[in-house]
Image 1 (cartoon, rainbow, N blue to C red):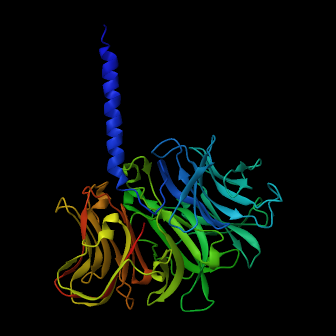
Image 2: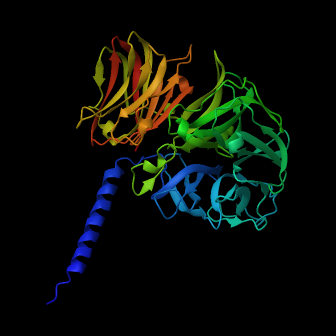
Image 3: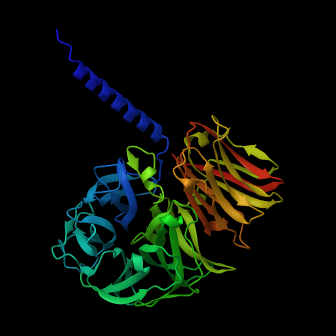
Length: 501
């Protein structure tokens, strides 16, 4: 009998490879969010084409259909009825010779484009076609089956100004001027162009917004939204959002401008040197609003990852995930109108899973006796009555390793909200060692709400004026959660927790 040592060796290598893959999958299952969307497998980045249609919230997203790394950019697709349970659908728009970059989806309610079957509802996607190292231009596709399948327009491009970098169209219906308005970025020139159209096919340049004393970084993924000013019945202001990055400079994030839009021109109400940031964490990027959201609310979500270390995210078989859905409005603060974000669904409308009132803490109160915390998917809220401490907040401590912990809280000396993940487990880049912090807004409450979903932490504080979103990758299987108060007393009106299943 011949013994084929080569075959035995190959079989052994396959077994080892399979074991390593299985171990990798087992190791990262604990990091996959429960209710924040992530694809079943492979790479994802920017959310695209967010739209509410026929009872479903649809998200399309930048997706590599064949690998767990950036490339082969196409549009993935998922939908949800309640913003918590997501159904991933087949690939929506596959790449050809062109990559399918970021864009939007609108409901062509009146069939003004003349595309598709006029007897069926029509969705129109407008996106950037990227021809690598050549140019970027805006293309269109349409769907008569609620976004499940798409037909690329025969006469693409619909907008081409012959630039290497010209991308990320976002389209709204502007009721006052009775036209569709597109915001699209010229990234390296740090500007946003606005185009108008009556039929979604032919676009006329309206104006350009730039020269804002900008940080020396690119602009991308712009969007316009009309937001209600809280405390008034009808007052609204226009807000222009964009994502900005300069990885070498250590910043990747989103900024916004508050002002007026008259159907042609956007005017910033603040001086150019006023820098307003959407989220002070590193893991909230490329957010755009949902088209046709119910009750005229403005809702959005972002990519919950950073270009600083996206390639190093240690997850398998997926890489990349979305943030929570947040409702947007504006609120008057001593510094002027500022963005307010609220988690959706609105958990305040339902009874919390756990609640205690009138709590005083001098050092630490451990909450780990609460079974639901081991699910690692919950929202926890602290409502502060007053404090004499130097620093207070929440601490997640590994039960296996005293050197592994994450802290979220407020520094009363520096007057800063913060997330410290410098010892949170697996460290992806030097950016993890820098504490993510946001300034205190005078006159506002010291209430904080943290959405915990396995590897994700999202802090909304001071009634949503402050946002910090940060990923972490704990190595310990179990951790203890405590409320702490350093060098003083923390008086809490209440602690509330909502479990997510």
